[in-house]
Length: 201
Image 1 (cartoon, one colour):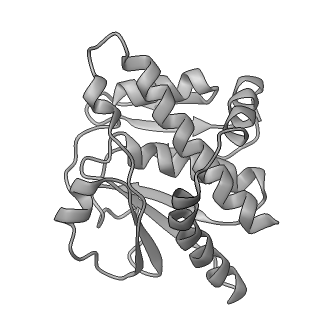
Image 2 (cartoon, rainbow, N blue to C red; image 1 turned 90 degrees about the horizontal axis):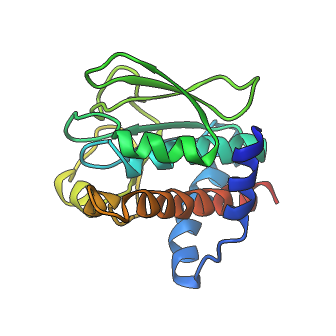
């Protein structure tokens, strides 16, 4: 793991998870454990309306935490509208220590690396039924209230897990923008670390 990213990861380990939140995260933990117990590779698709901030953070931190704890999973993200992986969220991940390569300008495709030898986590804004997303045998993890309300049915999802996060978009173009994006990213990192640490233990 890259040095700066390891520092962020260590900080995530120290973030306290309140009991009410643990109950929500335990639903995700139990799903992953059930799939592993039945010798199936867990597949998670993190869903948010625009697939631009919270769902991307969740996919990337989940895949990174899973790799750290050697838990074999597939992590994806998607939305109900296509926009772009927000540049502020990308900048926050760079500050966290990820190495990121960009391809394209309109809805760019990003390759995100957590160490020198890792395969890239590929991230861009896409719909749930995009060809690069799973079409069956996956958990739909809803990361925002808007997507939860506007996605009453996701074809072939085995289960629907509600894991809401506040949108850092509220702080766009304010003096607190970078801080609030980093806070949301760290919160999601802490919760994904909690999930995969508890699967490994």
